[in-house]
Length: 220
Image (cartoon, one colour):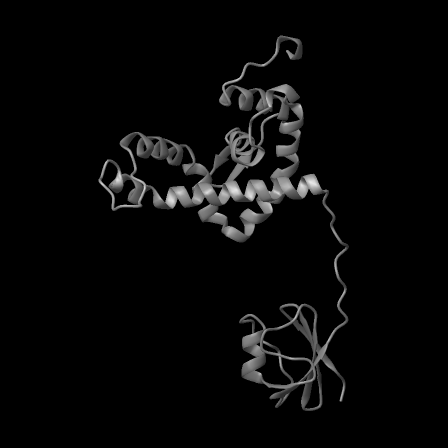
């Protein structure tokens, strides 16, 4: 009989006689190459989409299509370091935001031996940071951790541009990961649906001000 072809999800189904060949383009979780699957299993593995089937077809021969990898993407060592530092600061902000209630409850309380007490001033400073980061946290909650890892990657060029715009002598004594990167991220305008990047040179001036330094006149 003539072959009947239909598509469902990322797979191509070709019905011949009482068998249905499946060309897996990106892999289906319940179908292995060379296996025989039932209609119910294949339907479940096609991400819930209904599979058009020929008369009486209830068994399927699974054949994997050739895999074509995407072209490799390369990053410099500085870009990779910036991505990791941005992601580390992302995690720090999410952690502090999630723990603020507990931190405030402990403020000024006498702790057990070996436990560092939380002062009222430290709790207030933390609460102020968390309030400032609220749009960032709202954005994270909307897109999820997986998407935020890509945001960290996308922000690396901006972080490097800001760093490069700061006069070298103003960077002495400041940690790139714990001071420069957090101050840089503070210059981003976050909302619950996205973010806007300022001009790197403008951001560099703001970072210097946050660090308590003055921009040199010759650089004005």
